[in-house]
Amino acid sequence: MADDQFVYAVARIRAKELTLLDNAFFDQLMAAKSYKECLQLLSDKGWGRNGEESAEELLSIEREKTWDLMAELVSDISIFDTFLYGNDFHNLKAAIKQVYIGEEVPNIYITHGTINPEVIYNAVKQHDFSLLPEHMRNCAEEAYQVQLHTGDSQLCDVIIDKATLDTIYSKAKESGNDLLTKYAELKVVAADIMIAIRGAKTGKGKEFFMRAMADCVSLDKNRLIDAALTDEEAIYEYLSSTIYADAVLSMRESSTAFEKWCDNLIIRNIKTLKYDSFSMSPLAAFILARENEIKSVRILLSGKLNRLPDEFIGERLREMYV
Image 1 (cartoon, helix red, strand yellow):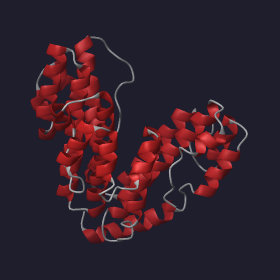
Image 2 (cartoon, one colour):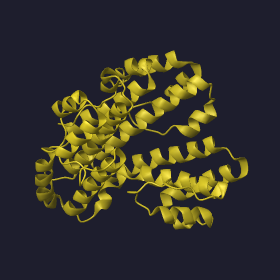
Image 3 (cartoon, one colour):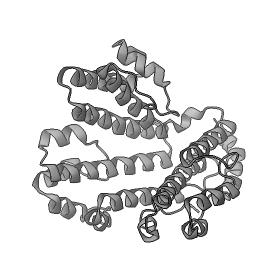
Image 4 (spheres, helix red, strand yellow):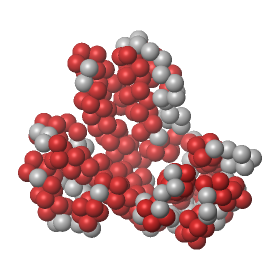
């Protein structure tokens, strides 16, 4: 898609941005007296199709709407594959586990990947990884052999998770798009930090960290590993010397607070890259904005359904794009 062809698509997205949920609307949702009242407010806002959906159906429909819109706006939707590779690798995990136990497991595959889940399942079942794209073959073979011969599901997941990060990072760089590149950088940073923290808490060794962590530009993986091999405080000390120093406070609070910090960091960064009317960046930013609000709506609805205190729910809501 030539740069000048994005002009119309970006104009459409600018109009669609006006329909994104803002902080004022989330205040309305928080003030709602019940879960059902929240669903009604969302329906009045145009979410869902007939006002009778469950929460999961509602969120699924909204995700479908986003991708249907992108299919209308661009001739080649593969330009957004950076956001979808994670679904492919999730489906690879699911296929390996399903083949390993030899039973059909319902509802374990995610839609909106770059590869049909059935293709992934058949590749694993037939042990023919040539059916998969090149960036998945080696990790699929290794993870399959580990699961088959050792039954070590954790190591199987580590192998696939690392390949996921490497693929997102390399494919984003290949795209030449600043927003995708920044998104991938932050995605890897967040994952590496979380691996370091969890590994330090459970006493993981250097081999684990080397196998699990992905390379990126803004963190020194070797220094992070050395810190993780010492203790959590050493991780905080290292991060305090980087551009991610303000993550330390949230990390000390909880893993949930850190995950929120990561999501908010991505939203803040994409806001600075959404104004180029001659690139895909505003469209990619819109996809991330929609995923961000869907995540926040899920958190809020779950909290309301389980009658959790508003303060507890509010602490977990993400920053909005608008």
